[in-house]
Image (cartoon, rainbow, N blue to C red; front, top):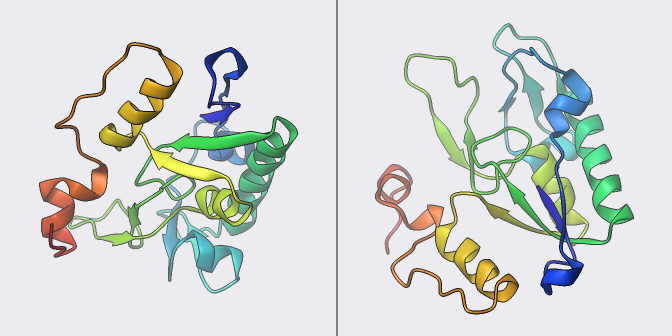
Length: 166
């Protein structure tokens, strides 16, 4: 979801858009980034491949470009994206194909997230509960976010998997 004018509720306009749906439709094979993250894809240093080895890079970049165009048209300020996606991952993506026995992850962003970020549009994960709470406080007078909520990069799995220190 892209939010245009999210700082004040009367201006809030949610825009629902899936770059993978736009460029590949449904049903579709499973796209994952190989050789880097979304920035590396945009720079030509990594590819998006499906589980059969079919190169989906061009389609993924096309979907991301359309998402960015929509965001710019509506003067979007924030995108709430689905983390762990090759398109919309904002913190974590698969490291190669996710349909293997032992899926590997990497820190990084998906292709659409990278394109939005490069254009100055903030990105947040639907798993960023603290950040989402703060956004809701701005949008909904009287709402109080859970003071114990944490963002995705602070959960035990993330800290353990990526060996980060809290």
